[in-house]
Amino acid sequence: MREGLHASTTGGRRFRATGLAVAAAIPLLGGSACGDGADTAARASGASFGGVEADTSLQRLATDLLPVMESLSGLPARRPVRLATRSRSDLEAYLTQELGRQLPPERVRAIVRAYARFGLVPDSLDLEPLLRSLFLEQVVGYYDPRTDTLYVVEGVGASQVEAVLAHEIVHALQDQYQDLDSLMEATRDTNDRGTAARAALEGHATFAMLEWQLEQVTGTDVDLTSMLGLGKVLANDPLAAAGLEMPVLRDAPAVIRESLLFPYLGGLAFLQVHWGGPGGRTPPLGAEMPVSTEQVLHPERFARESRDTPVEVRFPVPLPYDWSVAFSDGLGELETRIFLREFLADRERADRAAEGWDGDRYRVLDGPVGEVLVWVSVWDGASDADEFAAAAVEAFARRYSDSGSTGEKPARSVSVERRQVGGRAAVVVRDTPAVPGAHVPPAVAEFALEEFDAG
Image 1: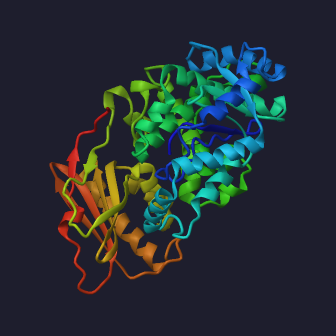
Image 2: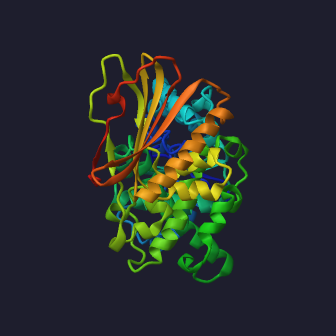
Image 3: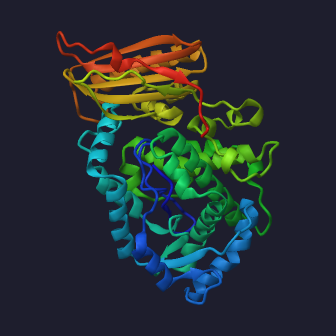
């Protein structure tokens, strides 16, 4: 899931499908490789805010918004922002091209396999058309860091596009201080870190946009950091809280739906707390950018004096010759929470069991016995690891007793083991086929722990 394509929906009800966050680990459409065709379109139909080729009313609206968003985001413009229009048919063609580039069929199959093994999506899920439908649902505009251009879909009225412009202008300003395309490329294969980065960027843009919208309504300056309970309001029903009417998104698997919304709403709640702290309104870029969804979910763990960085889990031992890795990544606290919520009846218990997360990595393997999942997680303390281990035992039992969302009822054997490694509390989950006499070599689950590398 990489930031690159930033899309917004109509009116004040805006949704930005950053790439296409699919289950925090399903890489989004990122990088927005528009190529020469897109750059030509930008020159033909748009210009920087000061240009004479842009649609006059759109250019005037963007020009009026720019200084306001500079102030609210804390990012004075360093250069003009390019503005262009694009037809909906061009947008659809571009999206199809980008999905094929970012998510080639073999990668799509591997991602679906991994999330199906966790019971979070059906193993028959046709991901690419779902992503395309999700992205195009009410889309109005997006910022593309590869061409440094803010695109607006043709034929959208000024009243519908104002909030979109406000949000996307912030992304354009962010890109002038930190190369968004490079940032998302750097986090492309680290699901949780990429989601945290998107939450900082999306939360920042949503925060500034929302303050602007409230100021339009009230006629006075608004400080969202003083609005108590915002995070709780957003957590109960994110779609309703955001005022979004998006049937495709609402009907998508929970892991896709929640991962798509989290950068906007979770990022907004993070910014509210973070900016309300002693550091003030420092733009969430560079060292001010969270590196895990744990830090986004618990902003106090991102505070300078108590910053909690995750432990890196590695699988350094070579696999036997007849074993191979189909897919490997990490869930992070966000998706660990989503997994436990999927199978535990008590939502609060699921959240508590995920709360002591300190790092994780899983890999789906193919071997002589069939498909094997190995999932290693590290926890803040022994009690946190014990709580998660107990929850994981129950979640996997229910995942296979009721087949979860996959419709699958295979014969599987799941072991959940508590380990202590280098003073760290860890939990190792092995999900293997229940084949009589089958042997899974110890090497498939050997792991090492390393300190987090911010580079």
